[in-house]
Amino acid sequence: MHYPPTPPDSEVIIEFYPEKCKACGVCERACRDVHHFPAGSANCAVYAILKDGSIVKTHPKKKIPKEQIERLVHLTCFQCLEPYCMKACPTGAIRRDGGMVIVEERLCIGCKACLTACPWGIPWLNPKTNKISKCDLCRTLSLGIPACVSMCPTRALHVRWKVKRPYEDFIEILKEQLIYQAAGSASK
Ligand code: SF4
Ligand code: SF4
Ligand code: SF4
Image (tube, rainbow, N blue to C red):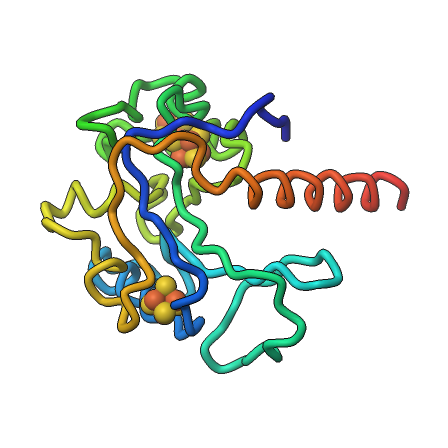
């Protein structure tokens, strides 16, 4: 895995208000339901950055004590202006369209080049279809509002246009964490 010199610029993202989030998992479940993804899979998830520096995926049934949490992050595709995934795809299955980065499923051969190329490990291979998936703000389903945004009970998610470097601080923390983990596994 490699790292970009700076966080990505985007034309549109799903903006997250951590102070409103209850880590209820409804966004993740809504994504799974509308896309008919296998159990446990989704194009988004809420992570907790803990005060000890670790990052854990939240789960509605496994509450993390509030005092341990530094902040919550809704992690999904950044819809990069210059997507690493798109550049890596050998079949042209990934394209930018209307501010979003779209996977054209019929062209995907499941080679995972995009998955390796994305510095945040966002794309994932759907074992049911052997095709890559990642968030496109529900564009390919023609939903006016992404399922996660419309279903969030606390309005912690919003679609925002014309943003620059979303979640800069989170990306820095994540980068450090991944480097730390890589160093740990390399030293074993
Ligand atoms: S649905 Fe809203 S409140 Fe629940 S985990 Fe997702 S962002 Fe947080
Ligand atoms: S999958 Fe990764 S590289 Fe591709 S647009 Fe999303 S965040 Fe950017
Ligand atoms: S897995 Fe699919 S979308 Fe990803 S690089 Fe390979 S062909 Fe392209």
